[in-house]
Length: 265
Image 1 (cartoon, rainbow, N blue to C red):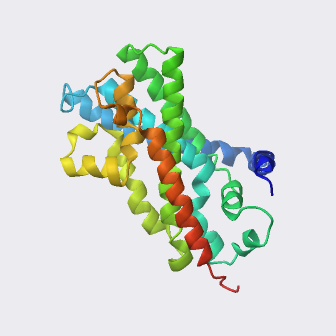
Image 2 (cartoon, helix red, strand yellow):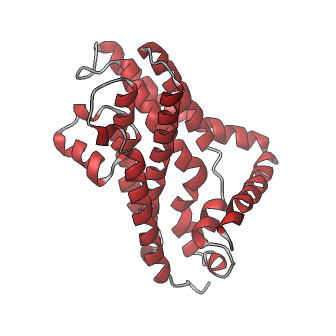
């Protein structure tokens, strides 16, 4: 199928998914708001800690909220549009359902991603956007057109970083059936990136910069928004990091696809 047809095809998948979700509107509402409550619990813990101390290693509450909001926005892109990667082993490989992707004239990865839009991610998007808005106001950030473009590019790049890392790890489902434990080990590292990397030991900062680079989805772009001096490769490196990770992830996916064997069920 020509690449130009994929956007319209995805739109068809999305419309069908939304129709199904809206048949049970209360479930849709609960799913969309459940992540807001989960994020609220985490933010409450941050507020309780910061209310007892003037700053965290020199970082104030609004600065931390901006970093937290940045990575929450990036995570929401992954959550909404690529959450199905988590279920590759459990729902598709183990049951043999992945076979139907292999025999259709549509790219299997596209089909996997388009098969399920996860509305739970809407809550993350709303929380992240709200946090960035509140923090930016308190920090006196002026949203010039250039800064808005920078912010948008950084959030999208952060979303691609999440998706690429999940894609690389979910491929293990082609060998071990259930890739969730492997994916979770890498994914949960983003919890560290909700806070300034400078508060951690150097080893963690290096991991979040070079090995599992969630720092480019939160700390580095947030520092640029706050006007904190940092090397250009940190402030503007997220699109490059996202691009490199995506290329590597696609190669890993193709390698796994070549070694996929149907369960025969």
